[in-house]
Length: 241
Length: 382
Image (cartoon, rainbow over the protein chains, first blue to last red):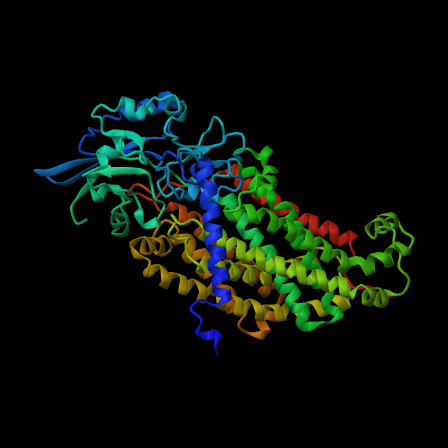
């Protein structure tokens, strides 16, 4: 009975001491070796903001991407979806530049059986290792954004990687460079001083298929709801064309 | 959304995985369903007369699983890299597990078959004949003493152990198929836990139908002793009852699936429309519902019909056609739903790959007939 009235009993003290010591040791280790902390959290998070108000639908980004990455004819790493809304005379034209969303929880990466699809930890960009890819096309089916295809030249999966060969040299992706209206803004989403972060400040942005919780890193400004996803209403009502 | 929208420019993505992969999934469910039905029936009958059917229901699935990776390999962009799937293992991908599940399933069928055939193989290895050396090799030159009954009782523990292992892998394989499709979270038609039950339905229906059809075909093509023939016909007529209830189960699972799709938002309703009056409607109503479900159910309803060889073969063939189309409707239909545009995705069948599938299936059947001539499927009098 006497023990029950103790403020802290022995077991509780030892448990608290153990937890405290572990936290202190872990914290001390991370302070001592900050690279361990950096390895756990990506240093950079490359992403893009596309201001649809600035897009003029010139397809310059599509062409630049094809020529920069030697994309075969009939296939696209980046393209612009265009739709016209309303009836004359009250019509509006909407553009939606599309590319790989570099999802933080990428279905293509999760379902790749060989691990050929991988993410560079330092910047969060999703890549395809052509030497490991078996060309099973599971990632093509898994991608909810239709951003992947099987390259007929390499017979492996292909997709946008933000022109990794350019961004690692301090250049911008080819589509960003070629954008006439400067609608595409690329940069590090983790860096509050980057152009992309500053552009996002004070603006509300949208992302595609947020219901799937893939956490895409492509943000849109002022994209029209009607153009953002597949038009299931039209199909359901039997109006395919 | 009521506003008029005219699409000016968009990209069509097409159907990435075609008939060959749907066929691959169907063949795996068929092989595993066949083994489940054959082995669970053995646990029910436990009769020596039944043993030839258990051998068929174990060795033929082994042949199927040994050849079915060809369907996958032919469809790969880099077939020569197929083996890398074994060691470039990615733990979040169901396919990475599936490669091992199907392989271990095949190995367990092979070992189970070995123990099923072993007593008769030893018996044949003792007799002089042109194939004596081959039979001796199949039992690793270990010629046990005693008659068939004694050999069988000595190895009973090992035989039942491997039967249990192969049964566990069969269930695991069907669960894998369901999980494989339901893991595609962007595909509203597949992203459902009902997928596991759908593949169980396909497996049990096509498995019982396949046992009926294959055994009747075997009896038609090659000589079977009269006593064994009579016993097998009795069992096959009783498999008709399993088939009847399996079809009922499959219909119930599909009904639940469609009800769930109705509550899965507009994507789910559109997925259901693919079957009801969309691009797969003809295949769904004619091949999956009328030929694959209603016809065999009606044919298996009465005992007299189940006892007729012709009618039970028609019912079995219809069931297998139905499950094959079921698999294709589900697999192709799931990819017809557009990801970014407003049209059904275009599916272009590849005649070369379809021909390859048909030829490989013919090879599977011929391999079975060849093994029937060599391996002692039927019981032997010791």
